[in-house]
Image (cartoon, rainbow, N blue to C red; front, top):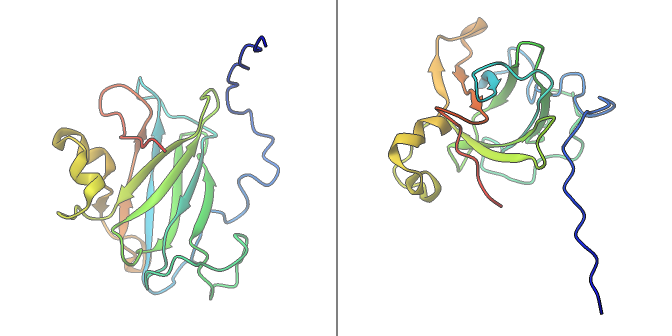
Length: 179
C-alpha cells in the first residue's frame, strides 16, 4: 500500500495574544513577598539582537520541594503558589519573573516559544551550580555558564535579583534540552 508523504513542520506563531501572556503572568508571588526573588533577562537572536514577543513558560517546585502546585495558573490570591508562570518579552526582548527559590532542585525549567521556530525550546535556569546535578555535569564545562542565572545587586526591598539571558544561536548559545 503506498504511503503519503509526511506533512511539513510549521513555524510557531504569530500568536494572537488571547490568553497566552496574561496580566501578572510573570508574578508567581506578589511584590514584597518574603522570600521573593526576581529572575530577569533578554531573549537574543544569533546576532545578539533582542527578540520581542517571545513567550517564556516557567515550571518549578515550591520552596518545600512540592511539585503538586495549586490548580489555576491565574491565581492571584498571594497565598497559593502554583509553580507555573508565563511571560512574554517586551519590545526590547526583556522579561521578568518574580518567584520563590525552588526546593529540592537548584533550577527552574524554562520553555521558550519564539515566532519562526518550528518547535518550542526547553532549558533550565540554575540559581547555583551544584556539583551533583547529572544534567549540568553532562554539559561541556565551557557551555555550562549559559544555564546559570547570575546574581545581581538586590532589588527594591532587598529582593535577590538574578539575570538569565537566553541566546537562540551563535556565540554563547544557550544549552537547549532534547525531550
